[in-house]
Length: 195
Image (cartoon, rainbow, N blue to C red; front, side, top):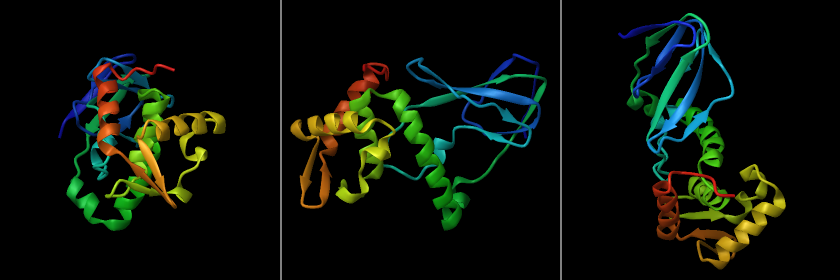
């Protein structure tokens, strides 16, 4: 098992692995393939795990960009590689559901920094959609999106007008091809917020 000792202010890239902090504390940054950096606001301490937990998600409806995690030691720190089986996690129904909810909560914060407002709402709608790309209307409210009520309804009405979403009785239907095309266009532009 890999063991990494870091001096204060030294940086290390996780390269897709997971580590247990056995000594010290660190801050992390998510680095996208486009070069965009998303800093995490809290430090992690001894006994905590670090890694790209989005890779564990079983939600295949939402494609996230490739992410590398950079760790910066805030003091003398020791990391020990932590290996686990994704299959074992996903076979434990309760643990998988709990982990899925935590990942979904983190993804929502991550997507806000990643996309413009329109892309953010489209990505969250994809996250909530079932395998038929449908969402019960009662499950969607501006409160799901961590933006103001007026901003949500302004953008949502544009999405309906542009036929990204349609409403049929109590169901919201997503034009998944059109949504993917828009999100892919944002990816090609380097995932930058434009609003």
